[in-house]
Image 1 (cartoon, one colour):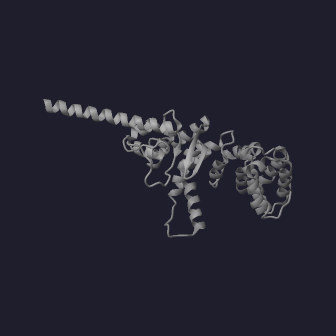
Image 2: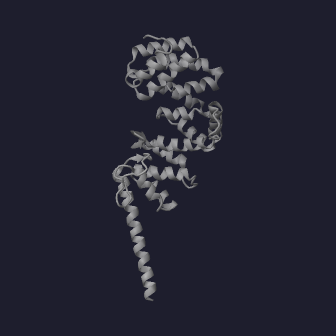
Image 3: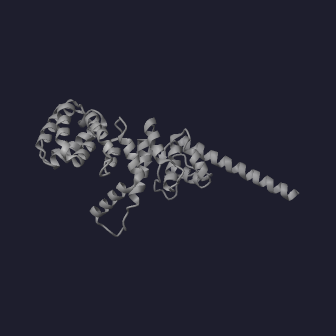
Length: 305
């Protein structure tokens, strides 16, 4: 009887200690409140409990060793965005079938939350939807990874694009993104339009992205996939929309750079004339990408505004 009571007592104490440890780690992650990657330090500065005051990578590594999959799923609903993202990242990495990646991305788009991130020596602020999207996008790309001894970059890129095009979940996520009447982080569209062809029902949404938001990736997609309609799309865009655009938002400066790059690479004189005039009459691009324009456009093509 005494032995049995002692065993029960030990189990209760162990469970209590486990709970306390888990809660302490969660509290530390929330306190640091940064989505950190491994900093490359082999002997990090950790406290006596093995936790870090300045890098959550070590804190989450410790946490995930003592929580169950169900607990990780619960953490994806936590009000702290950093903790949520660590849990989502881990479940995506594990190919967990119970996490709804599409819903997580679309919910994050709706909420527009931003977190601090730390990768290597770079500290930044990032949108949570971009973090989740790129986690899955990178996972899909990784499936196409070739033998590290093979060095044909062009073939590797083709294999990567083929893999992206064949992933039904990614295609569905992208399709839902294209239906949204808003301008997301420009890099998302760079990824979205790696898919060669979407359902015809999305054509009007893609035209809308071009006309309303000056989305250069939509422009190139329409040029490639709708050659018979493109002359009319081109004329309407440049006469009714491009001519009035200020290009003073961050996204728009990237779109403008992409358009001018396309114009010169394809030797489209009409586009070059229109875009160079826009560069002379707007200043947003100077604030965001002046160096990029200078080195990759002006110097390369010997242009003086």
